[in-house]
Image 1 (cartoon, rainbow, N blue to C red):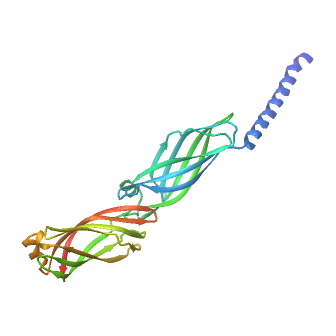
Image 2 (cartoon, rainbow, N blue to C red):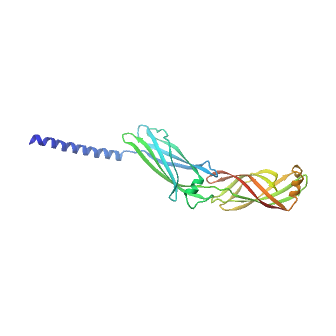
Image 3 (cartoon, rainbow, N blue to C red):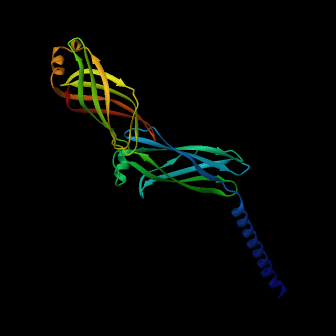
Length: 283
């Protein structure tokens, strides 16, 4: 009897020890410090009319006394519950022991795809977004850990301001010299303020090139606001020929304006190339 009971008793003792050991190991793992990650900064770069890049600076903290290898990183962006961008970033080395490291994750957006994926937005809109990320690390004695993180923000889908040549006021006009003030109406069609820093333009009247110039006088435009810029010009009509002189002596003509509008916004600097045709009057 004694011989047959010994293995059973030993097995029970062993199971009890193993159970206690597993509980102790689980307790240690649960209370041990773990790596952490946070989004230290999110900024917009390479802002253009067709695309932009959201750059996320992730600060990864390593509590261990050995280096912490970084593995995969996956991200997805959505607006109003509608996903519009997802991707993966390659491993970016290791985090030094008892230290932290900042890694940058760029996410390039093509605005045409955003407009297709998210309902209710249009060119000129400010789009709210939420990014969800999962960073995998190779923790010592534990293995792969997945560290989730999320953040909310917003970005613009810029559109070119409207530009209209309303009139040209001739102050002096002769075959040798023409001096005038152009009134150019600029309308901000974006849902965010735009600060004009420089406006370059080329003017053609009745398909005849007249002049090219640039204005660097600052001007601010609130969302949806129109402002009229008064731009002084001067040129020698004789250099353009008699046909051009006859055009500018009239009451008005068709025009073509083209050039570049450089602006600053809360989201960064942006260049707006433009081209506009219409009818203007002379005064």
